[in-house]
Image 1 (cartoon, one colour):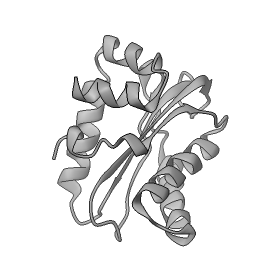
Image 2 (cartoon, helix red, strand yellow):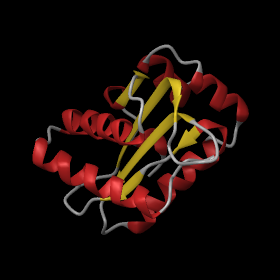
Image 3 (tube, rainbow, N blue to C red):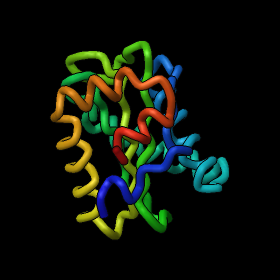
Image 4 (cartoon, rainbow, N blue to C red):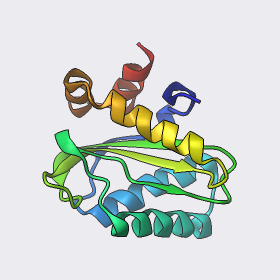
Length: 148
């Protein structure tokens, strides 16, 4: 499974207006739950799993990127939610973050989870791609970056 298989326009938030790590995660999870038709209970479980993972070690990387992620046993398929913030957020890394990729995967398929994380990290190794993401004005702009 490649990123193009899981990138959905309704799972992209531009601009993401949250100002804390917890609020960013909440908004990304909420976006996923709305798009996947999941209720508040599922959202709470997903949010807790992502926050628990962040408590182990921040998923903030260089270039203002963070890849919060979790394995969620009740998910049927992997998902990706992308958020682009105009104002950088302290996400626990060496530098503040403004590009977020929430990766959710079923716990029974660790290989797919690792492949998605690796694909996101590889894509974000391109300075040009990261600049284009950061300057995106809409979900459609971000979506087109994956399909042009």
